[in-house]
View 1 (cartoon, rainbow, N blue to C red):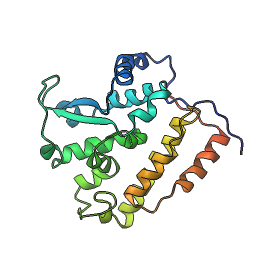
View 2: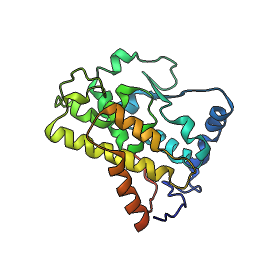
View 3: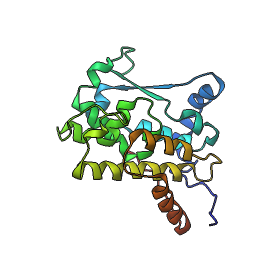
Length: 220
């Protein structure tokens, strides 16, 4: 089946914020870096501000040679106040519902799932709101942290969110020259949920054939 290989940009190159990340990307490209640390202050957490991270991924799409290198490389560090240089311990933010909700808010850009390097953070993105509302009771799981506790409506909702993340990742990489399939397959295998790459890919092909367009939007 033929496909239009023109990229489907989440934001055009003319958006002013696209160039704001050039220095960051150049540094990451030219150094032996395996993580990209992003600091977020508590005001941003409690205010639900995620625009900077959304803009980062929109800008990265215009640097397709770096997409693979940045997969699962975003290391989110939390600080009490902006530019304090003090990091809140993981044991604290991983036990605070406000952070679960903040990570879930990142699902407004569902492909963020493929860039967070912390397994817990990825789980919070998929189900942080449910966890914060005490709808989930975490139990040990060999495949996908916390995923064994999902059933019923909660399972169906997480599957819907996971589908959206995988579909968006295919759209994000369309026409970039980078094939994300191995990474999508790997993530799905790790999570152990009843969703296959083939199911997502079928929908992606259908939508590409019909045509897709985006307009840049972000949450402050």
